[in-house]
Length: 215
Ligand SMILES: C[S@@+](CC[C@H](N)C(=O)[O-])C[C@H]1O[C@@H](n2cnc3c(N)ncnc32)[C@H](O)[C@@H]1O
View 1 (cartoon, helix red, strand yellow):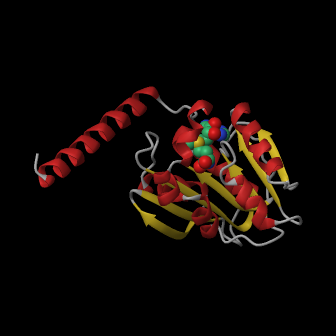
View 2 (view 1 turned 30 degrees about the vertical axis):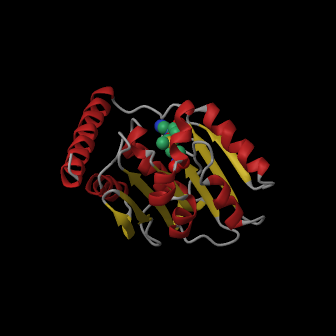
């Protein structure tokens, strides 16, 4: 097969695969990524398009901040966030799966960090205190949450006024949420757009809780 035909074939196969996976995910409904597949989050592709340092840069952290990592998984972002906010700051990692949370806890301990808090709960189920966080992360999680609007409203309230929620979505995650969908739900929760990075393939949308907005 010539190089051009091979490229075309690969492209068509990739798109067809993506369509099949998305249809399967839509039929299956939202469900958490199994802990045994968490290694998929740290492959060279993921590192390139949404590596932890890149995502942490987009969060504009400073020492002393309080960060909420919703759907923390194995702690890929919890650790660098905890390092950035330092001893005077704190990172709260929340996940619905105890196995994921335990991995995140171990990783924070192994990094000799002592500013992590861990909450086993579903996003949107009322486990979060209001007006507490400067920043929140929601990285390849939103599509796994059954009550996404409720989760965004809870995060909105948990942020301090002026706080920022950073949402990252990446293809070919079967639960990928398009930017327009995230923006619509975020506006309904009260957020305003604060920044956009990347492309449709892998993007970060920063959403702000207005400094003088309603609760
Ligand atoms: C694809 S992993 C992403 C992990 C991490 N954010 C990262 O980027 O490395 C999705 C995580 O969200 C968690 N999750 C799924 N549904 C959730 C929910 N309703 N509430 C809280 N966490 C949830 C899963 O258990 C899983 O750890």
